Length: 324
Image 1 (cartoon, rainbow, N blue to C red):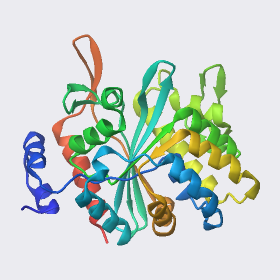
Image 2: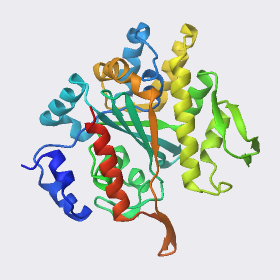
Image 3: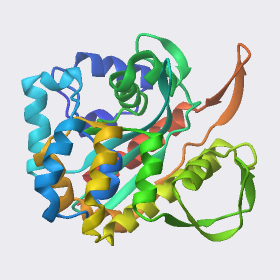
């Protein structure tokens, strides 16, 4: 069978790549965590592992595909050997009587050998093929099939393995920022959102302010791309705050926030490996954007991305994963 690397070197269409994927006998890769990752990979520490254990059990929510023994072996080997991992972060807005939708989609590629991380924001209106549903906005995958379909859609769209996923209610992210004592970011231009004014320059945000800050896009000349950049800034700032966090009195508050708002299919051992083997990568973060253009199809606005751009992203992240 053609190897993972060889398959990506070949110059073929994405449609052909998807056909190759369907023929593979080895399974997709899995795992994950979101707000817990922000706190734990930032250096939350071993001294709370006994208390963390019960919370991780509450958060643990494996995908259906995780039950495959061959897949379990693949994932266990990745963490055992501390190899590069790709983590899909899903920030979900849930409403009463509504399944919700993924308001935020970020792919993290973490290489422990080079101690580096790529943070790719995926515009929620990106026009892609959602397996079993056809062409649509990528964030609709969550509404159609939850986390399972979201992970599968990102894998097939970018022709990259997702080793870990993380899903968090955005209200929980707000609570997490408050528990950290706020985050400090550099704002590129002044704007108003939800009745709040955000001046240009360095600003410190509480949880509610941070949530409004990352949601604004209509006043941004870059639209959704500017919104995605603010999301990356807040997440990076939260990682840095967590790295210097040392308040033992806040542990219970953090664990309550995580347990009530985060779902993941990583168990305790894998989360511990993230802390010990991957934490250095947060100090060297490269951000990536997807270049495309707006297009109205059937009266609906989509973010249309050319095939060459998907291929560029696949190549750059693959090279990052394999760097030693």
